[in-house]
Length: 115
Length: 114
Image 1 (cartoon, chains in turn red, cyan):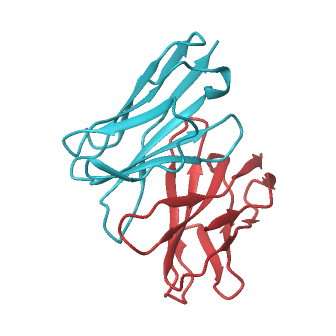
Image 2 (cartoon, helix red, strand yellow):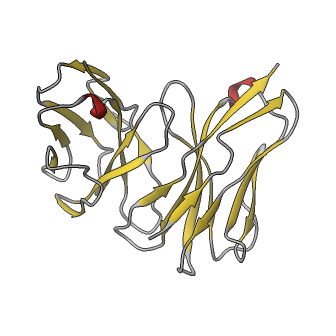
């Protein structure tokens, strides 16, 4: 079974600084998707960024970028120029690249942004 | 609506009562997922629907939990004889069901069992 591990229950960052959230996963598949989702206090899960395993280039979305190390099964999220609105729970998720497969989520990292 | 809709947003019930939670996925999304999120915890998979069938219900914690989906649309999650440990936020998500697989979440139902 696939597992997703987030080893940092809590992180904090000064406003305008950079923070990196860690995620590792376990799989025997060669092609799959990886995601970072953000959950603010409103409970709404928001997709931050997605990476396809066969693509070697790291995905980037504005201030959010990933460091995808396929051999190490590592998928960290870097948030640059942190803003107060970035404060939330961040979940890493994995999905096999086949129709009809569930998503596996990590336990989350709570990010605090200090003004 | 444009997004995944869940109702009620909050539900308080007495221990031993049955509850029904509803999820309206995005129109055209064939895949539908239910997750449970206990306070301060991650997402715990409950059940997955493809169309109206549930090929993976491995996450349902006990036979008190059941779910159905009709018309490849609305899904209801039923919890019978609720227990205090059932208190959690229940999140529903849908996706197109193809290999693109982007999940779209509702805002969840916060269930409190007293």
